[in-house]
Image (cartoon, rainbow, N blue to C red; front, side, top):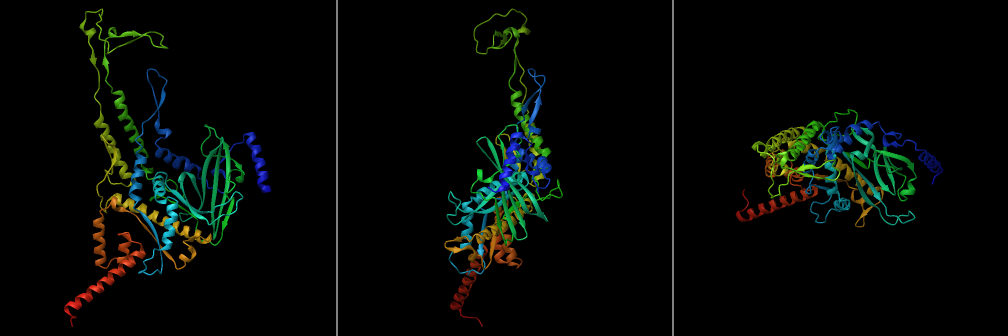
Length: 529
């Protein structure tokens, strides 16, 4: 342990014993003053996404047994989560594909592109297509998410390298990431916060990523605090020696001559109207908070309708038998519906013997109508066409399955989200290749530096068939190509899902077949002069 760390550890242990107030991440030196933004927005959006926001869902009710009031939890429809899940399904699904192709590679080459194979291996090792789909959904809820890339080198118990490194991809929610520096909305430095519990302590790792010109630096600090139910979850605790809890984690790593940061912040489409100076994004349901609250109130009322609307029968008190219950000060009169023994009542008045059904009609249709009205408002607020989300009495919350045309609001919203995600995913691929070069990684015996020496192209193909009529899109592309308003290569890459390399090979093959057909016709009928 360094001398500085030794004394810092001693000082912090003294503070622990004295119970000095613990810092949170926003009180660390160099961190922007974003605490209010996180408390008022990101943490609130996160609570709503999870289905429990104390300010909404803890309601006070007064009953005969509790005239002073008792707190109960409002039933939640969780429409916010449903909206994010539906938007994520439109934007990202198992048919989406990221590919890389080497520039200058022969179009006639039948060998697979090794650079693309290396990329697919990295993505597969990190379960990217599944994990990123989950992260996209959370980014729509919390206003953003972050990807980060690093090289994991296997080490022995003494910390010595034992083999070639492997590229890892981390997936971080907006609530665990804090921007530190940015330029024109592009975040260049940030903090990743992660926490784990061990033997009665919380250990929180604060990972700083800083890009300064062409120098990239990653530093790690650990803080700890005892596990207490009363402590807020964002409390860090006291600084703790890194090697005591993570002996193989480097406290400081520097990479020189880099072109970019090795992390990307992905935010939903739309301006941040809550903080003009923030590079952070907004939840897609940020404009719909009152609507989501109203939906939960109506959904709770629908459930309470069945609780409060249960069958109630008014019977004369004389028809009730006194029953002694544990804890009761006196016997209570109860009606036994299974008692078939005759019993004489001391009355001759027919009104005293009457049993009345006092049940009320359930207002199910009215509740469903109100819920569907608010769902239509919600659709407009988050960028969906009306009817994309609806409520059915038998199936509950459901989504539209009909094909949506190109000029629909849903289609435009999804494409706007895709454009932002596409740019950041291309940055991720570039970061993967740059790390591979810096750490001298290879694939199938060939250095990645050699594979990218002549340049490369990255394609991110989204699957819009869920929300768009694919045949109409293809026909439109054919018309544009025929009118010479679009190249065949662009049409095949953007619409048909070809990689740029495969598109060029296919175009060359088509041209070759056309030449063969012309020669065949000339052989049959002779060349016309």
